[in-house]
Length: 94
Image (tube, rainbow, N blue to C red; front, top):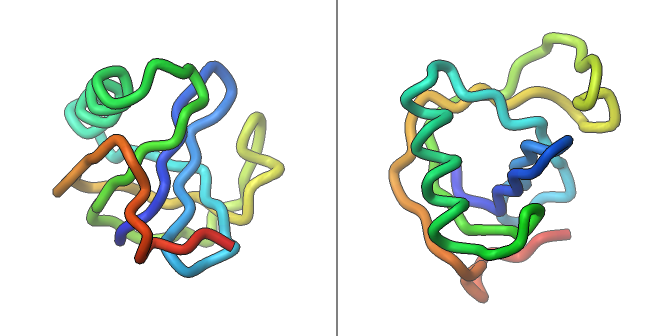
């Protein structure tokens, strides 16, 4: 899945290209979590800045709780394939 990833104090979101759905990003393990944090720190100076990512994973039917309550669902991220600082023009976010 390709889309916009945001990392900050109370946010870990993933919005797929071409979609209005916004997921709470839930890395499957610490390696994936560390890669996402590292890419975010390298590619944006803003705590809640968006970066472009291509990840592997799947949405879950688990009920969101805590900070994730205002999101559509969880998206479990199993791998990070690509990361870039800007959202490409062909990745429309609704």
